[in-house]
Length: 460
Image (cartoon, rainbow, N blue to C red; front, side):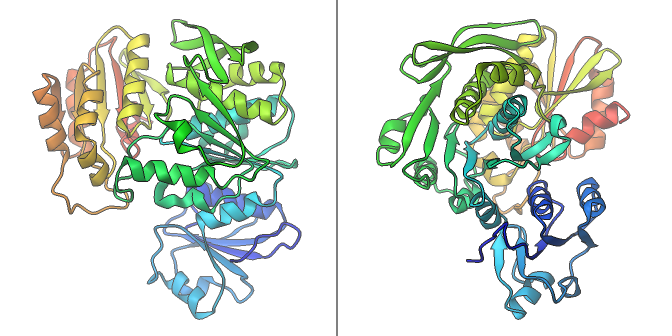
């Protein structure tokens, strides 16, 4: 496999450079003296930013975009062999790296490489770690799967030996990584278009953990069923966290919530108080995320003051319980939740904050996930007073399963919930304008483009 070496900058071409992860990796290589070019189907604020920084950007993908000086080509999972640039790279016999392989190669250049994995919570926890390390003055390099305002985007270029990134389990992409510290936040059924079942997912996380060297560190949620047996053969040190687990290395004591749903608590590390946290984001799920972030930060040498300052200052990333505005007395919130566990956590947070009617506009994400977790989706969504369903966002899939949001609507109706299903965003917007009453809370939810509904209502 082609090796990315910061001491020997090369010319790298990205097929699909506009993605949130690809654009960040391109920016890292550019900062290290690499010559970077890339293409995407359409320009965007991310590609505009890269162009301003010195990246050669092509709109549309064609063989001629690969200049003769290109040394290696990086591509996303959405790129197929018939892609003209991919085919040209093969014809020229150029080395090819997947996005995950490139990320793994970049990690090799950092003595402290942190990979944060889990079915959900990756972006939030990565962002929390970032805030602590910034408060500690450690000057890390960061790659996060969302827009973090404190770093002005999805990537931060540091000058230390510390690199922090999310690690996604889909297609086992994180098996290409070379971490020295790994985090496993949770292991739940998801991405069942790729994994066979939960046992297959657990084995994938087990393989990820075994990538750590003997001198590495695994930080894992002690609430994961059977985690000790699952991780029994790893070679490195293991540290556990749990909001309530009495035997976990890091746990929370004296948890209270203010009127905004923000938790305050003591972080207790093996019987000693390591920090007192007053989080700037709502929800009990963020207590667990914060414990994991503290464990990472302490492993990297952060002290109590930086931990407390960093997490007190963290206000979330875009699309994570993001208050978008107010519409005639109705508060409009957007959230990226697209798994039943995430939906449940978000709606429980909303319930804690808001006592009046709670509306949830949900856009299911992928046909396979919707079919596999149908009952769990219905149960989680039932925490809202009234549910509005949009069409399934297909992402990488085509409809071969005969499944639709109407099936989910039927499940919710059977649970006694008020539910409405519309084929278009325009219909949803018109319906909401006639039904919403001042004082109510509206949450648009999903990993697709459902955010547009709230933004359209608010005139954004």
